[in-house]
Image 1 (cartoon, rainbow, N blue to C red):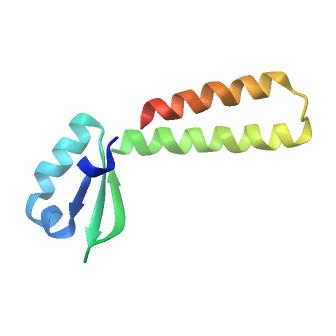
Image 2: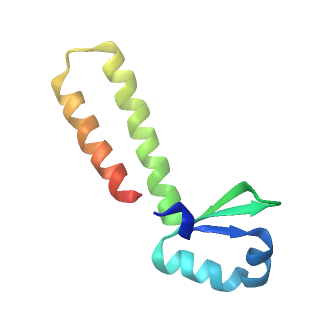
Image 3: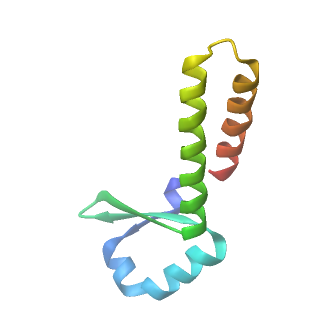
Length: 90
């Protein structure tokens, strides 16, 4: 996701809410909404949000596990796979 292509003002959101929501759902995009030139909120497809929440929960579990067993090679491999997966979401 290129930030420069996904920043919209709140006035744009107000004027084009239905079209923007359709585009977000169709393309699973994420937009940063600005107010007075400052980033204020993020609007994203619910499926993308849910996937991100699931990923965060998994990362928390893995982090707790790796803290208990620093030598676990499987955990290090799993983190590597998850990092690559997260990069593909961006």
